[in-house]
Length: 598
Image (cartoon, rainbow, N blue to C red; front, side, top):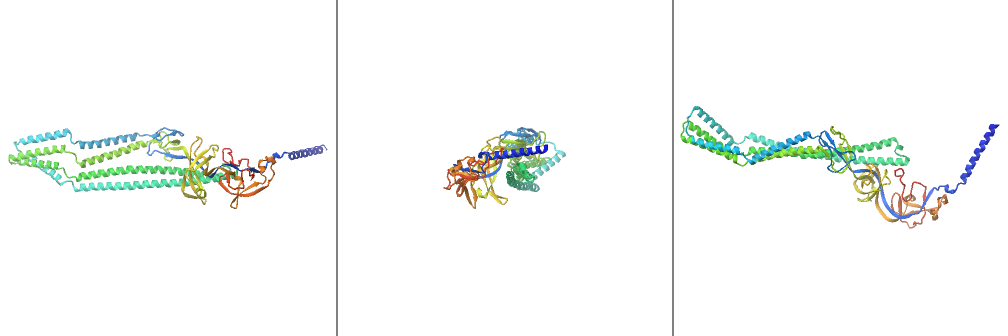
């Protein structure tokens, strides 16, 4: 019985509490009831017609810096994040062996120049003095007409005559044809080699340039693919009402894979650019060396084709005459023969002296100059190699990456350093064919960063691609927007929303875009029949006010507001907007939430 009593008492208590709650709910004031619509009046103010697109902030320029020669790192003179100026030294390789090569090249050049100067200066004073002494000796010999004659004297005289006649024969006959043919063949080979070097090196340079252009095209395609995947995922996130983790794993993997493809394409382009620069330098150096070989071969051929010096022939003839006269004197000819021999000796000594004091031949000077030029080219090349051992900043920027270690050779698979120009940023976006006709170079752009929504950024249209690209059967065009780096918080890769201003008015009658709907090719708004409701409090608003639907003529428009040109609507009109979103501001759009655009 007691259990039944307690049970009944409990039931009565529950029923009483439920009834009290119902009564309390029924007696709540109307202010607690939230209307399911929003009322707003048109406003007069500025309006801009914009085209919205999205992309990511990218540095104005990103360079992969690499040593163009092999070696061991001995100094790294910069740190990641450091600001550098053009010409700043960033790192150095060990140049001990290169410095020795430079000294050797300088010594070779000094020797070639000394040889040339020796030709210009002619014989030394000692050589001339010896020739003058020989002339005096020959003149003294002329005075000696007497002496004993032996068989040995006769044999020596005959040998002297034979030697003099042989030398004269060589001088009068000139250079052997085989030597000339060999020299001509060498010149032909040098010219053929020069043309081959020009053709091969030019072809290598053209190929490297083509590969660099192909790599650039691939990079642009990969960037466009990644941009489309990225913004498709953001739209799915918005629809799901969550963040990146709300995406399916396959969509997240696809976005990450697309990003890796872009990064690989950037690395390929940097490698292709370095290969092209190396091909350019190889072409210059290879042609210089081949041209020097042609000059040397031509000088050698000219030397062989140059006829014998008349002074040399005269001296040889004088020696023959002297030897003949001496032999005649020794075998019993009259004293006149001895005097003739002595006179010939004088002529020979005189010819030798004249040869030493004569000006150098043009062919000898040309050969010496060719040797100088070849030595200069070798020195220039070795000095260039020394300069290549120092890595300098080509532009002003910020060091973003350093992959060098002291006492180790640079890793060929990584850029030695990465330098980024962060003074301004580019945002590459795509605009479809319907909107691109409204764009022009220099148009202002309002940029909003997802990571820094409170930071206003101003930019302008810098480039509109003349060629289209088709993505998912939609024809679009690449547009580049540039903006200065006004805040150190801006980072490369930040997502950006761009509103490109294509037209504007300082004063116009505008309504929220949410108040306008498109039906059957026209634009319509709902007007509240009792315009005083726009001034009522939410508690005084009816559950469903009477409205009238009218068609409107629109002017400029953007994602937030639309200009109304119809005379049926003025600043006193009360517009009906279905639904309420506490996040939305009728004339300014959604405010930032948690650092993200809504």
